[in-house]
Image 1 (cartoon, rainbow, N blue to C red):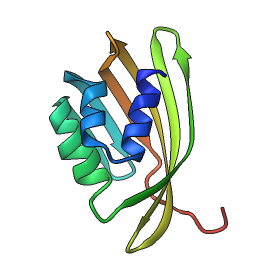
Image 2: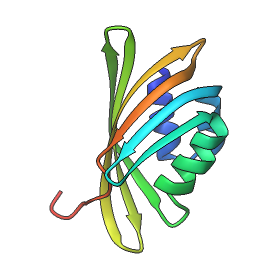
Image 3: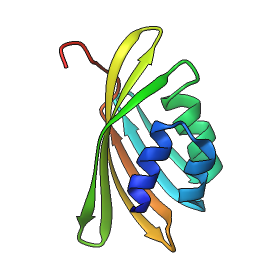
Image 4: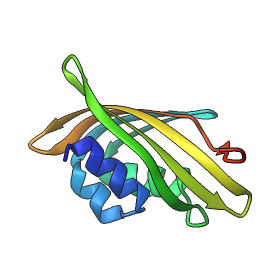
Length: 123
């Protein structure tokens, strides 16, 4: 399993330890969501401050990893995944495209583009 797929599966499980284990301690992270640009330089900032602190809060229940695919683009690796999320506002789909570099099995460089929470009705 690639580092990207491990990352997607750990995120879907909201597994903070799993996310930290696939990210290098020092990581060059940038993310773009519909309303904000995000930056971090440590795995703790990425996991606790962004992924599980802002993007997927405690009230957001990730019910399913709907799809995951990985590959490469020249010298970068790529993983795309779609999540089904439920929270007090309803049921949503969230899709993310990730380009990353892994060294010795851990991600050291990551760029994430997020669709945002899209209504899951009719899917």
